[in-house]
Amino acid sequence: MDEQALLSDLRSKMAKVLEVLRTDLGTVRTGRAAPSLVENIVVSVYGNTTKMRVMEVATVAAQDNQTLLLTPFDNSIIGEIRKGIEDANVGLNPTIDSQFIRISIPPLSEERRKELIHLMRQKLENGKIMVRQVRHEGMDAIKKMESSEDTTSRLEKEVQKVTDETTLEIESMGKKKEEELTQI
Image 1 (tube, one colour):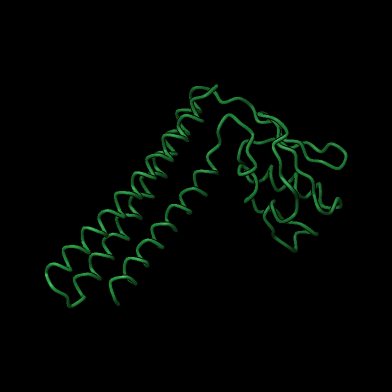
Image 2 (spheres, rainbow, N blue to C red; image 1 turned 90 degrees about the vertical axis):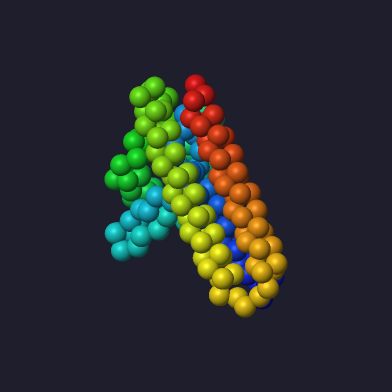
């Protein structure tokens, strides 16, 4: 593997870690209504024969800061979508309102906010662990390359630079999410 391929592969893996973490953090509930709270919940539809994510069977929109509005693509499965969200046990109570499902997002208690911040920090730490693992793989690949000491040193510095940038991005995501969680 040449230098450019190694660095390109490393950047791609780091970007993937950030994307996974961004998706994971999106599932941490804030005091606001956000479509990401329900989009990936799997529901059984069409007589429990098919399992699909909410985003595949309905449009999800935030009507305001406290309300999500789901519009099923097929109105005959509206009850199954509601039941699937209830069964997901995420603390949301969907109600059917003619052709829509309305979900009121209750405000977070101080205790719940602390729990969610703790959960968010665990997810951030898992992201940092994944980054360190990618860095470790990169360093191992550099050691396996037969190149000069200068080249090895330069590549190791580049890997560390990418790692530091990714870690800063993770910390930035964490600060932003914590601000969302502490807002009332």
